View (spheres, rainbow, N blue to C red):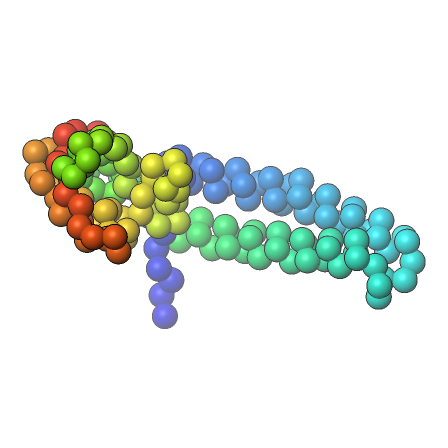
Length: 158
């Protein structure tokens, strides 16, 4: 079965590469040193430092494998090919919530890069899906567990 491509912005690829470099060049060495130190204490069968370090090592190796796979299957989002007036993955969209009057700015990204705390929402999220293909001035209705929200698209940037 072919691997699923991972949509990423240039910033997203850069962040994953930086995390991978940190894990391989710094964190691996740190945890290996912790394991060596714990082994030097003697009996590892009841050594909590050794167990913690081994668990951290397993986590780091798993994360490295995940990052490598994501980067191997990464597809850079080419915002130059997107019509300037249309929402697509890679767009930053200014919305006005028709229920509250609040304005929100979201960047639509692939699911691997989503970070709602920093206003990066997945193209697969309810809001992200509803916005794709829309234009400035469009009224978008989004069904979420709490009900239905209506957003007016005020601006789109790529």
